[in-house]
Amino acid sequence: MKQELIVTAKSVEEARKKAAAELGAREEDLVVTVLEEGKRGFLGIGAMDAKIAVTYTPAVPEKKEKSCGGAETALQFIRQIAENMGLENLTYSTEEGTNDDIVLKVSGDNAGLLIGHHGETLDALQYLCNLAANHRTEGEKREYTRITLDVEDYREKREAALRALARRKAEKVLREKRSVMLEPMNPYERRIIHSAVQEIPGVTTNSIGVENNRRVVIFLEDNNSAAE
Image (cartoon, rainbow, N blue to C red; front, side, top):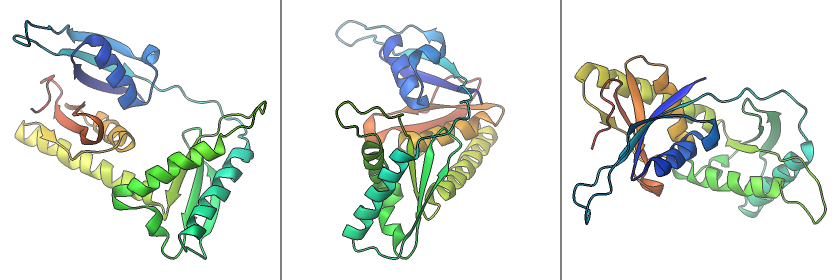
């Protein structure tokens, strides 16, 4: 599905990098239109950010058999973490995901402790699972395995909630003709918002802020600017 963004930064080059990070894509795979070159100004006076319009169409991955070695390593890793936390009687399973990944699912009593506030613990554990799954000893060759960790179907429920939020806020923008800024989100959640809004004619999105305070702004498509 084609995705489109309006991105601002101090330079066109920096804006391209921000867009690539936001979309989880390589810079060379982006179609970029420069809307404003930006100005450095003198001693900060008269400076103006660069603005670009970005279009990205993800490639459809070829279906192929995935190595189960990395997934099994990740499963054993998260099982050990859970046991160290005193979590017992949990159910573990793996399945092929829709994004060329392996989904590792965990469920059971108190499994929610692995999720944390707004999924922060879950994201940290997923990062560690990917490190474990793709650790190689010297000279070992192994295909890269991308792991998505999901506990009690949190990610599926969170995506549904975010898509519903995106629709509500987009409808508000269309109704009130005013931009709407959402709460700070991680890159995964921002991509869901961007994707959901792209399905609604008349509105588009931009991301502003830095690091943990980065958030999505939804605004009218013909406005070409985000809320301040």
